[in-house]
Image (cartoon, rainbow, N blue to C red; front, top):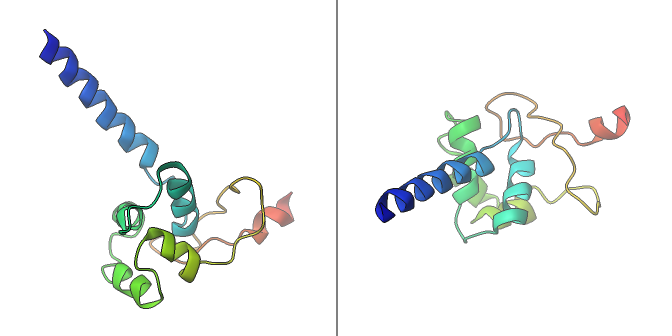
Amino acid sequence: MKNDIADAVEAELIALSGVLTEPEERECLRCYLLRMISEFGCDGKHRWTSRWRAARAPRAHGLLRKLAELGGACDCEVLMNVFPEYPRSERLLPCAGQPQPGSAVPCDLRILRRSA
């Protein structure tokens, strides 16, 4: 009985972690990384970038290599060195959406300002 409950709780936690870390529909890489790193931190690898690529840009096979060449050796370095432009804000801004499906180009947050 104890193992059944433990197994059920473990399965529920695995499912919940998948839901919490799933890239949102049309969420750009920059906004996804900001959201994941602010919630779960950076592990010194491309954990979140790889998850985003698998879900939103599965054909971008050279993405990690390209980001590393631009100074993004891990998820937080991608934010600092590859996507350093982000408006000053006390909270995360909502993503304006991928400019093109499968693209790692960050969203244009100026669109949000124009529509506000």
